[in-house]
Every structure is written in structure tokens, then in C-alpha cells.
Image 1 (cartoon, rainbow, N blue to C red):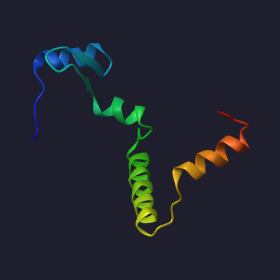
Image 2 (image 1 turned 120 degrees about the vertical axis):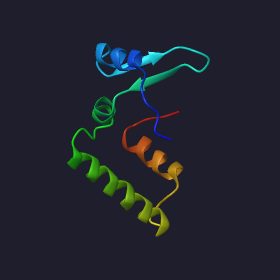
Image 3 (image 1 turned 30 degrees about the horizontal axis):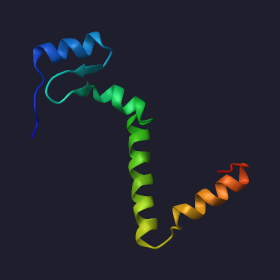
Image 4 (image 1 turned 90 degrees about the vertical axis):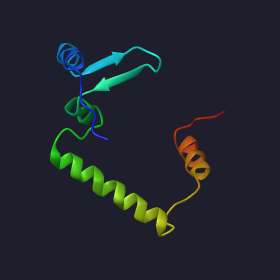
Length: 85
């Protein structure tokens, strides 16, 4: 599916600097791709490609068993930073 924006949505995006909250039965947020990429830290094509590579590397690590339980990580993290329950 490749939906098109209505003229009102396009105008609202311009006026809202790339972000618009749409009200209705299912409230949602409409965001332009440049604003989304900037928020996600992938503002440039190079950053975007780097992010895709990092995701692929993470998936490869999981598939190869190069992971550890998250509970172990948090336990070590909490000890290192003096965090107690």
C-alpha cells in the first residue's frame, strides 16, 4: 500500500514542522520522513546505511548465539553503577 496525503495533511505537516497529531477514531501521529530520520538518529543516508548494517550485525550475533540473558546484564550494570532495589 502506498497511501497519499490529503492536501490538508500536507499543509498541516508544513505548518507543524513535519509532525502532526491526527485526531479521530484512532488518534495517530503523521510525521515526515526527514523528521523521523532525524529523531531516530539516521538523518543522513550514510547514517541510515550504518543503522541497517548495525541491525544486520545484531541479528547475526543472535543467530550465532553471541548473546547473554538480559537479567545478567542488568545485574552487572546495577552493581557497576551502585543501583539497588
